[in-house]
Length: 219
Image 1 (spheres, one colour):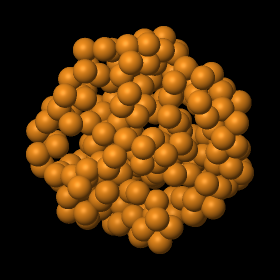
Image 2 (tube, one colour):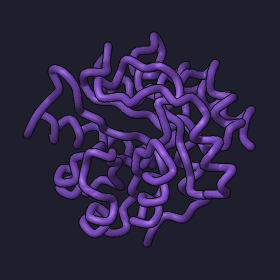
Image 3 (cartoon, one colour):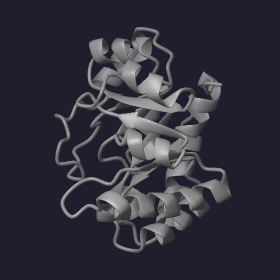
Image 4 (cartoon, one colour):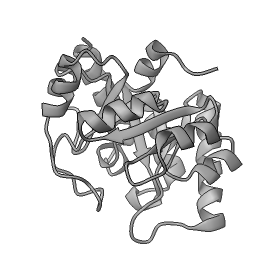
């Protein structure tokens, strides 16, 4: 059974994304700490220079998945549909360079499907093809993603909401607890972060601060 809009909206509140290359500590320790701080959803994104491949990648995915399962946090895999199906992840997140959303939807069945979009045409296509939520960004400048698109601020997010499109939406790119309020005010259901948690001195404290910022600004 597909996840409903209300549930998806709640899961997007504090959406943590991480792979081994984003970490200053052991990924497992960071994830546990982030969960203690209150993240609501986790995405395994193993990309970039020096990232793990093959069996090593799958092994890390499984270890992080166990931690998520123990705490009831859904475990999403970035891009790698085969890995997501092999380990029975809770869902996948894809970009515009990946397979079309309707093709991915057929492969994953009722699992969660997130799609990164950058304009109204991409958003409408993703919704039509079965996306459960949209990733919008980069909202602010970010150095985490080598392939990040041009910063678009809150413009597209506001455009999406003014068009009365109600699909759950999460902002990404350069986000921290201090700059979260405008994103929520613009109509996002939550924020997704990588380094704000993965490279924090205390991932738990950083996650908690994000959660508090969201709570103060829920529309």
